[in-house]
Each structure stands twice: as C-alpha cells, then as structure tokens.
Length: 135
Image (cartoon, rainbow, N blue to C red):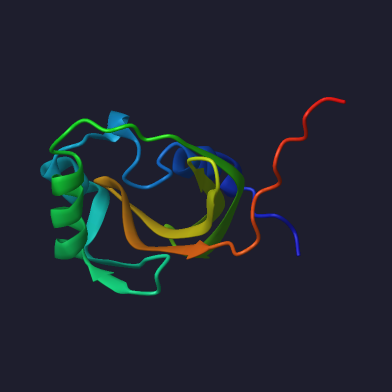
C-alpha cells in the first residue's frame, strides 16, 4: 500500500497539538479546552477507565488552577487517515523519569479547525532503560 501523500501536511499539524492538554500555547482555561475537543469527546485513561468530556474538562480546570511543572517528551509519531478529514495519531509519551504510555488521539478537521474526538493512553509495562554510568 502506498503512503498517503496528504499525511505529509497533516502529521506536523497534529504533532504540534500533542500531547493533548499539555500544550499551553493552545490555552490553559476551560474555554480553551472546550474548543480543542468535540462535543461528544471521551477518553480511556491509562487505568482503563472511561472518562466523559465533562469529567475531563473539570479535571483540566482543577489541574490548571495552580501552576505546575509539566515535564514530558514525545516520540514515535504515526498518522493514519480514517475517513474524510478524520485521522488517528499515535505516539509515545514519557512523563517524568519513568512513566511511559502509548497514546492515540482521533482528530477531526472542520472549517472551525482541529478537534479531538477520542483519546486513549495505555501504560507500557516494561521500564525505561536506565542510563549507564561511564566506566
């Protein structure tokens, strides 16, 4: 199967938006997050629990009420077209020293811009390799 040529423009746009809810340039207020996610948005957390849009918005509002350190790095981005203007973006997120998750977000593009319609995080069981001390 040939790679989708349209993804060369979409992939950088979506990478710029991830990790979802961790990009202060897209805002840190509830209204900012409301515009970032679709009205029927939901997610499945690393715990396996399903979270509604309202629950996620309440949690984000609580989290951003006080300044906090948000240390993370991303890698291994892949994008796949699911339908007209609908894309699946997957990647790896490392938070802190040792929490690693695989992330999946379904994004939809419309005349009003990009919105996430679904997100999932899955914990990676194997630990990250520890740096070796020089010998």
